Amino acid sequence: MLVALSTGAVGIPTLEVLQLVFRSDGTVASEIVHRLRLPRAVAAFATGGLLALAGALMQVLLRNPLADPYILGLSGGAAAAALVAMMAGLNAVLINLSAFAGASLSVILVFAFARRDLGRLHVATAADATPRLLLTGVVLAAGWSAIITLILTVAPEGRLRGMLFWLIGDLGGADSGALAIGGLVFALVVIYPFTRELNVMLQGQTIAHGLGVPVVRVRRQIYLVASLATALAVTAAGAIGFVGLIVPHALRLVIGNDQRVLLPASVLAGGSLLLLADTAARTMIAPQQLPVGVVTALIGVPMFLYLLMRNGTSR
Image (cartoon, rainbow, N blue to C red; front, side, top):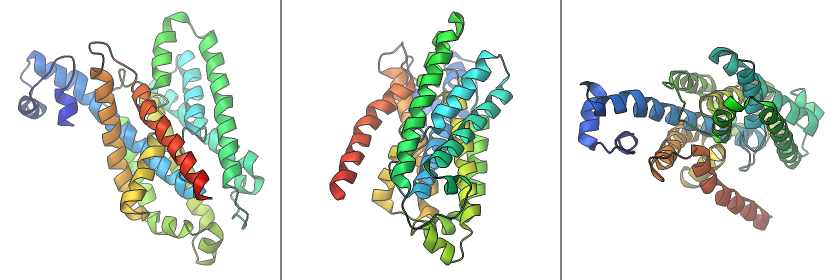
């Protein structure tokens, strides 16, 4: 956090930043810290935490490390709905609700098209629907992409540049991050009591059902929390990809797959990763700024290809 606050077009010594965080003195450096960098840093951390949490939950649900909100179309659905709300001139609350509705619609469509019994929240049979779910998610994401392109085509020219930056993933217009932080805390409070059930569900839903886990209820919790987390993240910073994919998978290789540890660790690591990525986006070609989604994509694309190759060779 201190690195993000001290780094930028105007460098501020770390010790001075530490003092300014707790005491504003009205100087230019103080204004930069309090008005520009601190809100953006908080929003970046919260957004990264939300994306990583959503990715970890979707990977538990599908029992596949390639699942994340971006690949399954949740980000695309949230982005398309939010763009429509923005074009209609709705306020921030309605934009958030629209993004949540778009993400939820994507979840429903993915599971309904992939397998109707999953769409009705029934307990899965022994057949593995994961490849079909992932393929459906990828196709749905492509559909959302087409809708987003259509929206951008008919959008007023004056709003187009801002919408494009937001769509790629940009924290330049982020507010205080209070909503994202509040949503992150709420999501953790809701889902953390179910971590024992999530650990059992990793053995398979049929086994979990046999051991007394309320599979349908837990799956519904995962749907809702992942959709809420994705919607809040997309609303705060646009459609940022790969954070939900990379962070949980990398942590799983290091600390194991115990959800009691993995979920909070993913939140911390995801927030830190996006904070560092946003710092790089602000400083790589300063004074100009890159959309943070460009930086995460540069990291995420080779990682995603590595995971695909690793899964392919392990079969």
